[in-house]
Length: 446
Image (cartoon, rainbow, N blue to C red; front, side):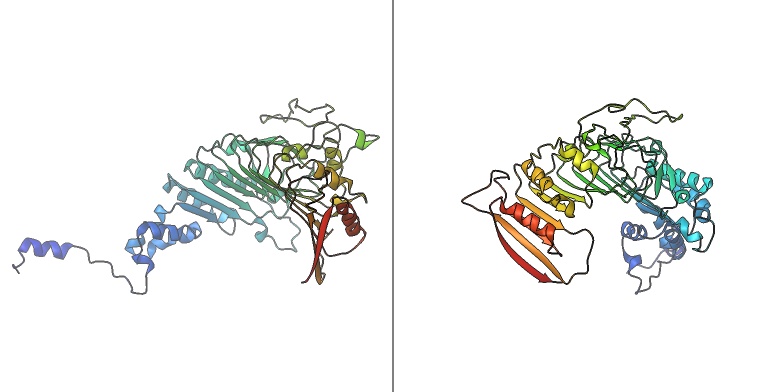
């Protein structure tokens, strides 16, 4: 081996020593992009703190593609997050999560709240991460139903050409029309435990999957109009204080689960079932843009009498449909007067006993008569969860020799699931007996 020259010796002496990695530290041996992905699961504060672990970790946090912004309070992390977001020009996803109620004990006389500065900071961070071209955004404010703890948000904030998935919890929308056309790539939207009091319309030309659950509203007059023509799947689980929404046609709908349990669905006409009102006072405003002065536009159905369905027309193209109703609601009774044909429906699940009332099962009969391609029907007969020891399951199969003309000729099976063998149960059996079904019964112990 040739002897080292003086220049080579000096070069080797000046070179920094290779980082010493503890044999037990396997994470530091991973490629930098994998390390950054690991950091994306940590709150942003903890991800940034890794810069002091070693020289090799100094800048890893800057390469994360997902930011989790959270803390004990907005005020506590305000300065940190403002400085943090300066370091990012591009991200894939971001989650913003806070619990305003943690700052208040149950014994406090003051209700939890977000002050104006907190709200301003949260909206500023949402706007900033949207500028980073994120595709997925989660905003989770655990308001727990406290009005002042909701994050007030306008649809004007939601503008992004890249956003495809948006999940919102604990948001109070301060817009009359939740117009999402500012997000032309948005396909998946979830609105959970939010306040919809000011919203009159939800509209999007790109949305394919919509989930709305456990939302609040103190407005007893106005019904939300949902206009999402490209929707493929829908889940609506409404609170009792939110009026059942008006569903516009969804020609591409494949599956839907829809619950009606609102006590606000009423009409004060002399004969409610003979009226043609969509809302209590016949006023549903179709608002295409927000108005700073709060004035409502003249809608398609404002002040008009109409034979338009509120729910069923919008669900008519579904292939798989689950309907939940735990009381004889005004809306379903009204819609059944103009019941559309469910021309694509193959699987129908009816949960709660309303569908099998009155004794002649006329509601169930109407649904079956308007489902010419139905293959499977499931009836779950229970008003509320019970701690019964047994579950009764009855399956009915059409008589191959004598098929009833009242039901789909494609029907293969009818399943009845219940925990109480009562009058409603026997009414259903009697009705299904007129459809020439052969039954088998199975009782299972829980």
